Length: 380
Image 1 (cartoon, rainbow, N blue to C red):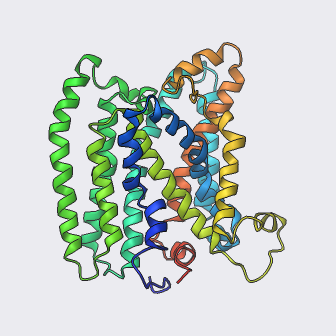
Image 2: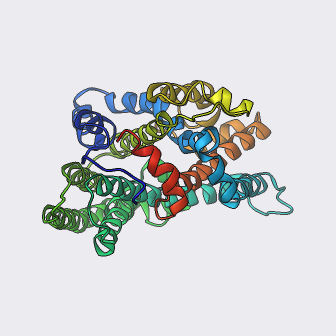
């Protein structure tokens, strides 16, 4: 990590970090107030989807393919940046478009399979992002690279921020689960009792794990206040997953994740200042948008205006909690080819997002640290 300069615990400033990275704390205010205002939670969620959902999905792909700083890394890791994405698009296309005589599964079942893969990996993905933020603050505070401490933090994020939230959403019958095969794992008549039992078991475990990690961090000679605040936000999310209605919890869980993703992408992009103008017309065009934080945020937001109507089949402001499968059943009768195409693009790009996040933020690899690490901390 010697290539990454460190001088202060915050990524940029307490105010900036507080809004973008520690958003899981201030988002508690609209989340807890939303039941007081009729349908406030669904409108805030719909607004957040339009502003942040797709920008976060394409954020790391923008860094990887549009910033000159990543050119050499892409060439060195061609499989990760080209072969794997191409395979994702090909496999999802075949899975959705193969005729039933070759793949004897109706479209609804195929969607359920893809949605199940999405839900399981998405829960892991959230946990990994939490660990990534803790790693950023560990670097900022110049903490020793203690493998035992890192394993504890990783385990905490995957269990509290991933697994236990995943279980809560299954038992709550959340919209994000209903289109998957997991929704059938617990009989409907047992959901309430199972949720009550899980709450009594999970909440104390989450509180104890959170307090234990906070105690460990407080004893570190280079303890990090923002890191401790982020641990608290993960613990609070874990507990609230068992007590808030699914749409309200999604407002907290999803928006926090999206804000972090967009912010880190814009920081990296804003710090890329190539010394020479690229000879490539591709990089010259995108050079209009990187090199400044807010221009990157703007170009990511613009993707929403163009693509949300195409990607979000289940987003209806008048019926925000209707299921994707229910929408598919209606659309298929009139536009079967269009429905399959949109489903393909939706699932392929979300899987691509998982791969790109890992490729761009894989700090364990020295080549990635030389690019992402330096750009992320370049303001020092």
